[in-house]
Amino acid sequence: MGARLGRDARGPLAGLLIAALVSLACAGGGLVEPEAERPGANPPAASPGPNTTRADSTTSVAEFEQDVADAQAVAERYWAAQFKASGQRFQPIRRIIPYQRDGEVSCGGQPLPRNNAVYCSRGDFIAYDVAWSVAAFRQVGDAFVFYLLGHEYAHAIQVRLGINYSFTIQQELQADCMAGAYLGDSVRSGALTLAEGDLEEFREGVAAVGDDPNQPWFAEGAHGTAEQRTDMFFRGYEGSLKECDLG
Ligand SMILES: [Zn+2]
Image (cartoon, rainbow, N blue to C red; front, top):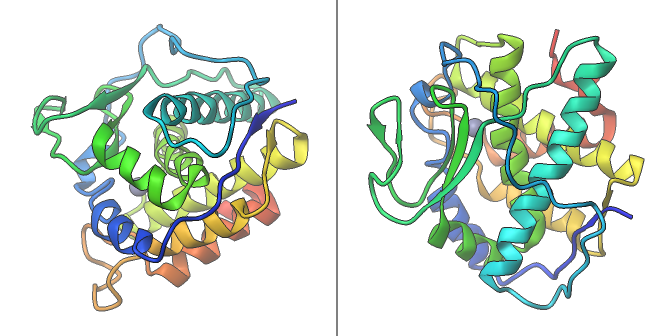
């Protein structure tokens, strides 16, 4: 039982595309600032059952959408359990919004550009450019969708926990650790099943979104180098949330 991952990693150009595009993801500290509106009462509409199976060889948009929905379901089941264990009620994000055009979706009055994926704290939603995300999915593989969704969802969890670091890079590396923890713990619990090659997809995907090594760590948009991001992701993946400094 459980959502399944699996598909061979794609060609060597994958990293280039992702590096160019995902470096924009979460850019703009305002998008993840915790002075957001509190989430509304609406649970997410799409929560497919955990039994979804499908061929791993296809790269259709429908399969991509199913992976996004599966990743959301796995993440929400995971975080609901974590909150419950702490005696807190978990509020899922309000929506996941696919978009196709510049400015089609705004976050707190700021139009979201193409080639991006963000968590918007003001509206408590995750939004992603469909064409860009599907391209990344086709090139890197489905594991990357689970990582990306997990990273953005981690920003929503940070808001719920009131975590607001001084530097973007701290917020981002913690989100990578939390994404690793949700994936590693979900694999250990059986909620998520990896196929051969998925761990390598995680490694390649996370490394590919590292910052330019010349970017100062304290820069406003800094997410961390490939080495830092990979290290934090796998610390969370292997050691769970205790590695992530959630206080
Ligand atoms: Zn981020």
